[in-house]
Length: 215
Image: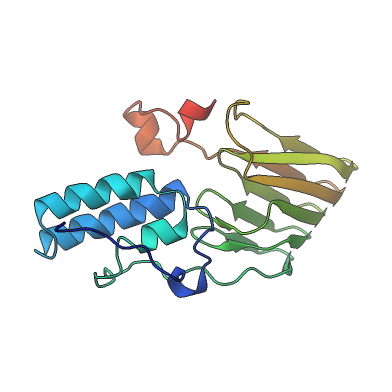
């Protein structure tokens, strides 16, 4: 059949075929397929077939099979780096962040004096079922941005004059993909765990919050 796609025998860039794909991963492949069709590399029939497969793909292997005969689009994100066991993020009066398609390790040690650290998981690559966060926050802040399927336990944080606020807005029908255990100490600073905020443009146009269907 014209446009038939064969499964790959290996992962993309060292990523295991069976690793679960995210919404962002599927969206990137859909964009690449549309660009390829616009360049004349795919017929309309082939595009329709591959778009349907991409939107229903569950793993990296299924997505990789759809683009093996296509060149990478300019600016296409490379395969994520292998996951580390422990990552240390330390800041005094500055700021540090992890966002986009970054690989989540097994454990993150956060040391904040008066600066800020932001861990955005909305597009992150999850390779372990549990993430341990050991946080020491002085007068600064630690923000963890979650997505559907992420469950957070922050009960083991010692609080002095600061605050710890963890929101779990996802409904019980969402399968758990990552459990985060936060421990450590907070001085006069604060730790927050929350879903993504709606952008100003989304608020202005009254678009629903991201992941609103999972609440």
